[in-house]
Image (tube, rainbow, N blue to C red; front, side, top):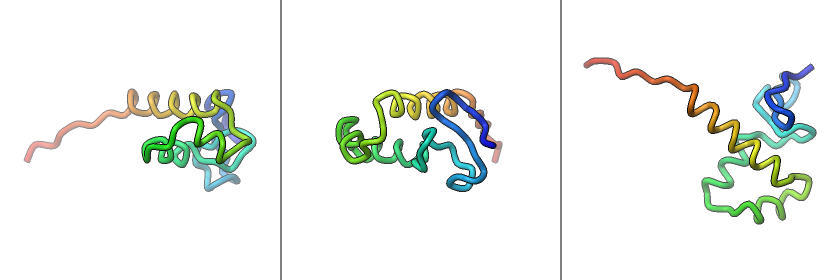
Amino acid sequence: MGMLVSELIVLDPAVVGGKPVIRGTRLAVEFILELLAAGQSENQVLTNYPGLTREDILACLSYASYLAREYKAYPIPA
């Protein structure tokens, strides 16, 4: 059984190798973020993937924001 990250984002080892996906799909969060980063508009993504909702896209952005906030990088002295 998968782990619920949010109501819309889940982690399931049996789906896409355990990457975070939009619940009920095989669409990885990273894939949706890559589409947006490449310049596709929200409307283009929703048109190309009619099973998605605006809330799904916002959940992907929220998940990315959480990861960016939680990621800690410390410089290593040379």
